[in-house]
Image (cartoon, rainbow, N blue to C red; front, side, top):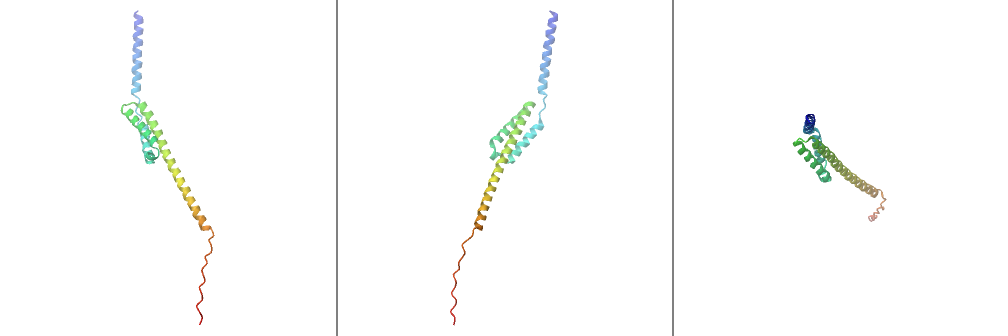
Length: 143
């Protein structure tokens, strides 16, 4: 009996040590400040690119995930902070790309309209016009 109790105590002690080690490993995951900074920069770049007007849903998602990442970091939860920061970075890049794509599309449409106006003007100036007939003035009477 003594031998079995000793084994149980050792097994229980080993389990407690393993649990404590596991908790320490989770608690010691460093906060990914570099990934948070990258996500923050991506959100700011998306805002400057026109995403608030041109890709508001994607920008809102990026901001929400960045906020969750910062909250997780404040609670020293390194793993979720890093995951949310990475997701915020991707969402912000998508918002920026969508805003840039819409601006490029508008610029192309404006260019096409300008080219069409130029073609129309060019066609008008090359069309032959009817000759202008100036009525002859009578000669003054001779004396």
